[in-house]
Image (cartoon, rainbow, N blue to C red; front, side, top):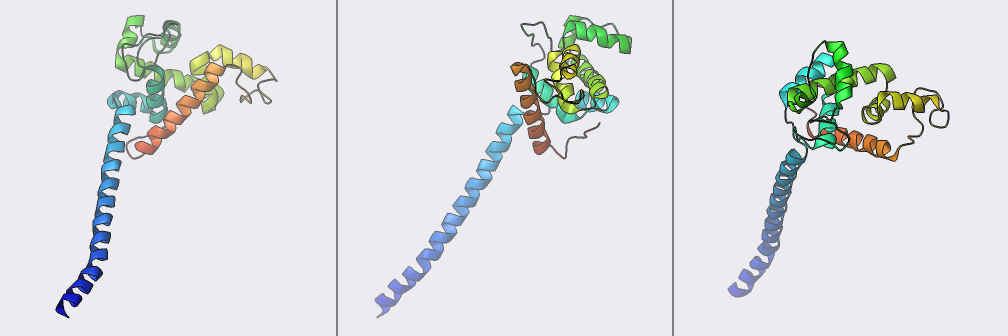
Length: 202
């Protein structure tokens, strides 16, 4: 009888042990997965140059996540990046755009200076502040950052692309449409990952 009882007790205890073991293993896997995902996300979408981003986002009233998204999409945080078109630095500003923006600041930086992270971020924020003031909408500002301020103005005057002359119903350039989509998605990722860290303006 004692052997039968011990066998029954083992059968009763065994499922509980299995459940407890499975539960803790599952919890451990969840925690490890979350830590790995956070680490990967931090590497893919870092908050590098945060001192400059915070400073100039506040100065020019531009969302921080927009600046981070632009840097991520434009150069993947490579301060020495130079495009085939001649755009330079973290935020890939064209030398002629820099020259135009400096008529507003009174500064006299060169194309090579755009490889300086602070200058690149400052003029990205300034450029976006000008574009947001001109268009009043984020999508059109991002399109103008990519295609050029004059090009977006031409599109808005065309009823085929804009029914109200203020917003684009259709973006005629596939590369600009793709760029807009990529920046918006990256901006959302930054906001989701670092909502507490970001002090968005504008």
